[in-house]
Image 1 (cartoon, one colour):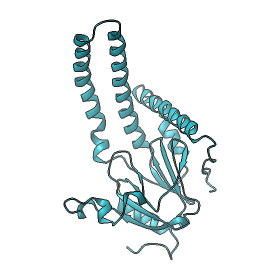
Image 2: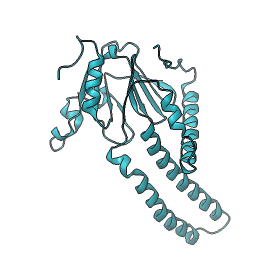
Image 3: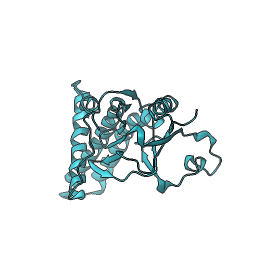
Image 4: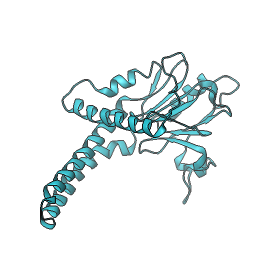
Length: 241
């Protein structure tokens, strides 16, 4: 890679590296929500800028992202009041205030998580640069695929599924053969990697994970992204429209 992003070095202690990445994601999550509420520069904007230049493809118009924050916030106002009342009635002794505090923290964490996830998904886009296709899902997942490592790219047709089937059945795939890069929404684009997949890598919470033969990801305009990726591939590898 010559655009500033390279795969992480192999972790000597993967568990510790994963914990460090998870802690970093939590820090970003709280910072994102804090900056959004107080109208400060968002960490997700700086993170997205660090992914390099290129054509950008949004991934925040899925049905789950559209209802996630209102649903979570509303449920917290209702469920937490009920749960706090149950604790106040059913629990006696010194444990009561600790349970109230724990429930309040969990409720606050849930709201912060929903707000920051939606904000990050709105600002961290997939992008196709001169050297690689970058698939970014919030702060946690990052996948880099050079055009030469792409064998095919297809739009996932969810409507073609019959009763009892899903998109995996439509494309005649097994779940074990697919790397799924989504937050909550269904994937809309399917990328087939070459046998060697030279230069392709994927990290989750900072730990490099093995990429499978197929990569499925959600993007708002899969047909547009498919056309752009196909144009970036070598003429001999580019899929037919």
